[in-house]
Image 1: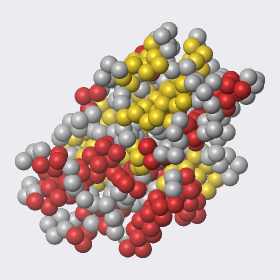
Image 2: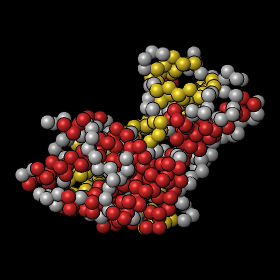
Image 3: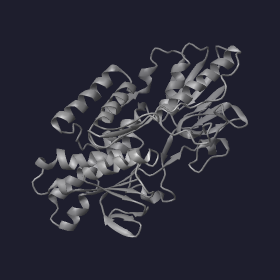
Image 4: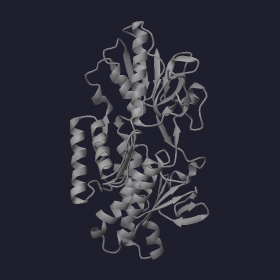
Length: 420
């Protein structure tokens, strides 16, 4: 079994957990990702809203496995899978053979048939997305400072977030605090406190996956920060000039999309059934039907709980799935019985609203307010990888809490000169 080859596609939470849990197993592992870093996605919105630097939530994948000679890391993009020949195909045409394949390729934003909205309403899944949003938010204030036309200035100071799940709520809260707390003394021609932050949700309430009481608390907390919460009407158009909510056009030069996700094309690679979000429908052992040597985990997999509800696409779920597949592989290599079907253990749902309010739903206990915010912060620091990054993030948050100054307000990307 020393030559048994496990190929893992995706260096997210699920893929890394799998590789970590296979330490000491008699296997060779090839980990393939199209980026060279692992991203702590739960804090990605804090990069987009100038709280944290990119280096505080992302780490080189190679550094994790420098002492694991059985692990080979490849910076490459998988574009196909031949399950008959047991090979994956890379974008450059190269092929890599596998004995067991694990696809943990994640998801991207979904625009519900309106992909033409993406250039004007970027989503938030990667570091590039976060720096794009940060650049556009900061540039909106800078251009408003130079603008002489009141209508154009108002449009520049109107920020629209589409989708009121955790990401949308967190983005709206931090942008509101940026405009009302951090920036007012730094501009002379505009009043940043009058910026409009609009949060749009097609459904009847914000944070629909949370308890109704917690959702109502979040709604009130957002309004207290000055966020305009609009529920019950979908966005019907996004342009460079603004957004149409239902039939009402709102001039808004900065739009952020947080309304939906679409899985990677793994289902197309394998020619297997997928759900409406493109996720592969897997069996109780996270295997692809009819392909027992291929596992799907994380946001790429449609996994059902025992009660018939879907396993949420969050980091703890992906980590549990990665750990489970590692147990299955170990059992196979040792000739032991499989560990049984996968069972997801829900550890709770968390969302933050600004810098001193949050909601937490553990099922048996529900928290809100500043206590929940501290629990939320401690939980995220705990799950960060490495003491150095835990300290860096904790220090950044402490500085922001004391000084009310966001520490990552740099406009550095080339797109800042695109219009010039």
